[in-house]
Length: 317
Image 1: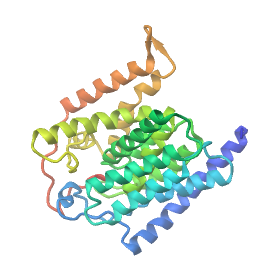
Image 2: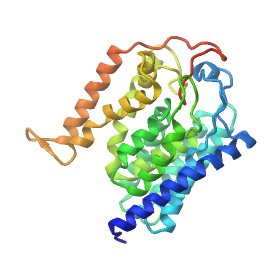
Image 3: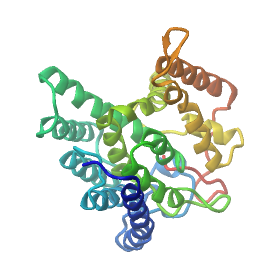
């Protein structure tokens, strides 16, 4: 259904208001049900901030999209079964102390990918469905691991879904709660694995948003190589992400999120353009890769964080 500009603006405002009002309510519930980020074992060093942070982002985003759908302003073909599956998988990972085992989590992501490509509305043959499932798994992992700094994934999602009013409004409503408002403090809420899986699945589903995967995949690929070269399991988190390096270089956490978005921006600027006979999106992708390499080269690798209770505060990962 085609919406007029006033209708679209009203629906966007309704989604924005819903998320702004729903997030504090979910935060209140989360504090009373232990639906919070835990810092058990090695996570106490990887997540040096001390305040408990609710992991409500995924649920809040889906509430916003439900409102958009009820008002007729959701993107056509929104993959609700897969989105609910992504939310539930992430919730299971959030709620289990230490998270789900890697193999179990991967199987769950494959199941979510199958929900995306096997429901009515997905067009394509068997090979295209297999690629779609693989893309969903890759996107959920890439965005999940990129959710290692306050506001990083939400800001990246705003870039990816800038033309998609419903998703953009939901993310915009959650962003103020996902950023710290005092130096050394923690945000009011995190996406959690439930939120990062929902955002990752949305990016995999929407073709125009997939350019946002480039920077997270560059960061993840570098870390897998570094971890394997040091004899570490590639799925064990640490503080070697680009966001952590930018923070170690002295950037405030809101500025880290902005810097990551600016690094991811060139492919979007080049999309639909031709530069010297080359596809602008590919040229932009090369620019992002160069920016990433230079940022890694010119920023320090963070040292071991202080033990729990130390003064330094970290991001979501």
